[in-house]
Image 1 (spheres, helix red, strand yellow):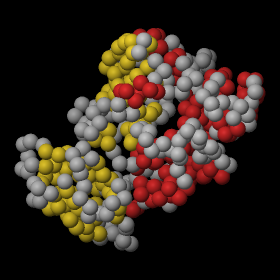
Image 2 (tube, rainbow, N blue to C red; image 1 turned 90 degrees about the vertical axis):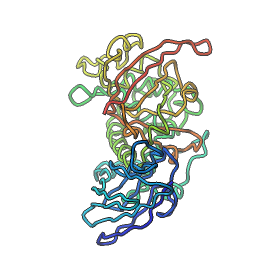
Image 3 (tube, helix red, strand yellow; image 1 turned 90 degrees about the horizontal axis):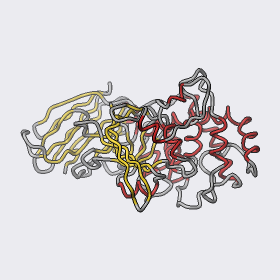
Image 4 (cartoon, rainbow, N blue to C red; image 1 turned 45 degrees about the vertical axis):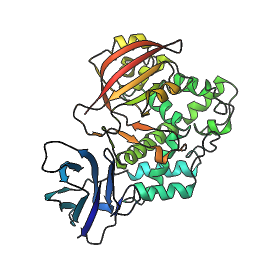
Length: 403
């Protein structure tokens, strides 16, 4: 265990200093495997990761501060100096090291403006969540100040992650999965989007429900033809809205604390997570799906057996096209599985999951353990297995993050 013993703050004007866990700066922190993010308002942030006992060093215990190693015995007492140019100095327990604070990601004014307008228009957040407790505006504002204290848009950053954890994630997924991003102007697979919206059958999330259809900027529909007609009108606004919301979510994720590979050596995902999509749609989660680059615009799908024998074959590297949710146990992943389970490992030697963010603190369901990978995360396919689980066939894909 360790604590910040003192802070010398040379910033002008004086910048606020706070840890993302919300506890006092001088609180005792740990245990082994825990990671904490220290924000210095607009100057940037610094990660403190408790590495526990590591052999071969000058002292028994180790903290990773930024990219430097801090050694100590007993309880660590870290002295921190912050300079006006964003540099810092770490001393104490015989250590003497420094570096540059990491600037938080920037959201463009256009993306944040679009996101705020979607809130005004009540497309964000999902308007009625019957199956989770959700969070109040006051709770999200407080969480925004805790996790994004550097930003005047801290509430919106918190809201973006919260909104992903609601049924609105289907809006993001449908519009990202079913876009031909390898074709000029990224046209949409309109039939796949309309069919996906129409085939939802997990009450109350159905096309006859006003809140579900509001997520897609539409009104309730009784026919697939009506969904298609509404989509023709709403597709441009949906596309631009999802693009901006995705950028806000990504910025929020990058600003949140990291998870250590010591605490979570593997992460798991049950796929296809949207129940009304089939295994043929799993391939659409990756940029390497051949149809994604085909100007003839065939449906963005591929039979799973063809995918694992093709671009998802062992040894290949694939790239996420949209966000993808994971949990920390294989059993929980099975709960969400629609015939596919992903088992993901970090890069060899990695101490931190750089591409995955633990978002449960901002979730609409406080018991829903969720780690979220960003679009453009790359994985190397290490192994595939076909097993039978509870009498049902299951495909397991073992992936490793590529950095």
